[in-house]
Length: 373
Image (cartoon, rainbow, N blue to C red):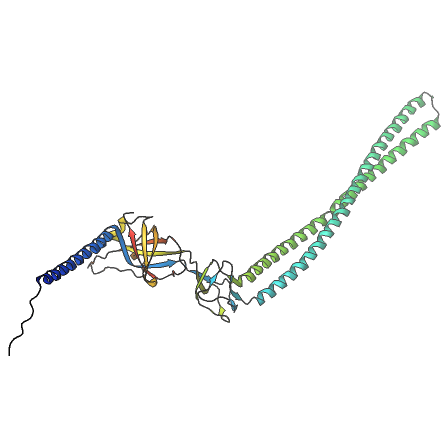
């Protein structure tokens, strides 16, 4: 049987295949060189961290007073405004105590008004008595001066008539009349002295009665102290009533709840966590070998794992002042003397240029800090 010979190959087709393979290899080499160059340039100009996390201030909401939860009108993940009601506790007992204190306040306020009126009346009456006694004393003193002048004149007239009587210039009747007038003037002077003493005694008595005002003033001061104490209790109970309605300290999101309506909670018990979505940042722990290259204000490229590697922009906001190992709960002593050197890490805080509601605290991100910025 005769052999069938294959047709001869065209040498031009052989050359075309070689050229295609050569171009493919060259393109692959160029692609590797291009991407390798980009990778090398990125590594030389950036500090890359793959285990960074999104952080925020988690605010713990707690109650100042114990009580039973009667209402909790929020749920996890809900956005709340600053001052919005989060939890309401049973305040029936506190409101009842407040009502009792208010009744005591009203009773003491009425007693204070009565005592103030009584004190005002006592001041008016007793001060009037003092003024009246003062006027009587002044009148008696004026009469005493008049009587002293009359007694002096009567004595002078008697002395003059006695001299004239020795020369038989006046009769015995005139001398007797002069003696009578002198005796009457002396008696009137003694009566005036007695009236002055009585007026002084009346003034002293009127002034002594004003001491009753001081007693009323002391009683009023004591009552005022009781009112101040009741007012302080009333203000504290009002504060307790307000504290039974726990409100959001910030405008943010409810991250977690630790209690439900009907539970009895203790003072200071953690009830829920709230955070502000506008205050998110990234905490990246960089190696100490790259620490010197990182500066505040450098640009950062951020990729979020949960968002399929979507990129965000940010800047270095703060560089830690100590390595993370200094804050470890369990120290790592080296009693045996064997030493293994471990590269330490320094925390760096990175802020987003723009907030995004899709970002959540705790999400893993990768960051590239542009150290040549």
